[in-house]
Length: 247
Image (cartoon, rainbow, N blue to C red):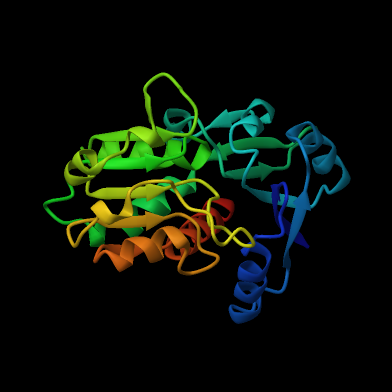
């Protein structure tokens, strides 16, 4: 039996086990299983590999996309450039298994974003600066879309939520939420921006997928903006992980 799974903490919000279990059933893949591994820190990751030697691949979610890298033997070029990992390929060897990190978030985000981009989406605002934001920045640089990172607390190279006004929103028409704001069960939270300044030229993309319409997307939609949640991105990154584990 080949085993795969997800590490993160907490994992109550995760769709991964349901997605892969249904995939295995639908595609008659009888020799695989997918489990959740809620570990508080990645210091527990090596022990997990020892305890479960049938593991052949791991997805990584918050808050471990950065810290897991110190436990890996190699990174692919995109993961190294991004500085975050959400997929680990595990290849058994004579002794310790070989662990290689990938970032499939970037693939999922790019493929799901591009059909919605218009000529007027010339600049972006990225809310948050965690592991997912690093993948988003990588894609925007690849697409030659300049961006500002928006944070709650002062950080070099970022702007504060309180500084976001109608002038900035007029020129930055692509808005991307990479934070957990609005994620179940914290439905009412959202990036603190003046939504009344949004309009039909804006595209609001939320990496959160549960609920399907977050408060961020709902408030943007009410102003006439186009909206997109993170569910397609999640499906794409999951399938990319499966491809990596089986290539």
